[in-house]
Picture 1 (cartoon, rainbow, N blue to C red):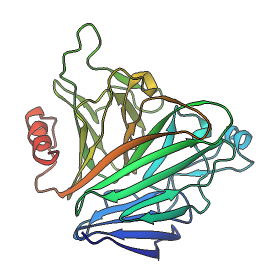
Picture 2: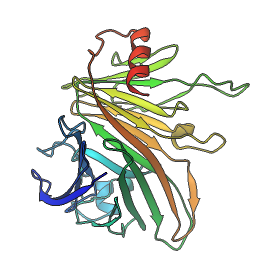
Picture 3: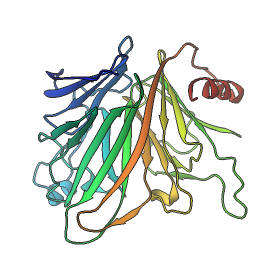
Picture 4: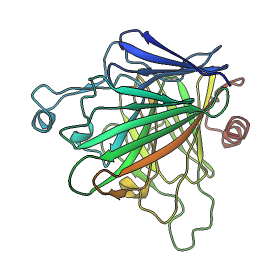
Amino acid sequence: MKIKQEEINYKNYGKCLKITSESAELIVTLDLGPRVISYRLLEGENIFSQDIEREQFLNTSEMDKIFYKGATWWGLGGHRLWRSPESYSTYYPDENPCEYKRTDDTFVFIQEKQIYNDIQLSIELSFVNEKDVKFVGTITNKSSINKTLSSWSLSMCKGPGLEIVKLPNDESGFNPQRYYSFWSFGAKNNDPRAYYGAEYFALRMEPGNQSPFKVGMRVNEGKILYLTEDIAYTKYFDRIEGLNYPDNNVNYETYTKDLFMELETLSPLTEILPNQSVSQTEIWSLQKFEDVIPSVNDEKEFDRLFKKYAK
């Protein structure tokens, strides 16, 4: 398999690295981030949203205190690596250049040390075949004290679209089998975009709906599916039972608003010593979506689509 690389100037993201296989393309920012700002089949469209107009940002007095006066975090779109538990310090202004290196066909992008948080983020990308990508997000403790963190991997996908998540059906005895974590901002848990079924959870991304909605859950199926009009995007990941995950022990979270749908996986919360790291691994897969997104919540149709595209 031939993997090509080329440094380019991409839209208003500045210098980026384009990585191309025989069937798919990645574009990763170099002047900021790093963010995987594009992932597409060569004959298809980018699955990730892109905030060209810089509509998504956060700057607060709390961030002024943590970082510096006027500190601003920009959403930008694409896929990013964060750390959990979330706080204002999570919103590190990642607007400086990052380094990258290639070893064989593996690319590693390294963010500057976050001098206010004493951590360093890096992402590793490689093609596992002509179109599927392995993503490893690593957080390294650069302080002199132990830190308890989770590696948090977030794909900001374009819409309109439909997310389908297979719910656990394992034997859990006296322990809860299924549980949800809800956030207080924006829409409530009975928001009509969300569907809580017998076997599947589903969430619709509605462009223009400015009410934010976020939910976390236990996912042990190892994959989730997101569908747009043209693209089927599957994300594969692991859950390790017996370990503690953030936000009431959920390993998967999803968030939607007017511009995007976020598909978020988390590693277990891990105490890392100075100069040690915690990582989270995902496999991404793209296919051409050859069906129609159902307009009503039909669990039999969700099951058919999940089995067809999230193989």
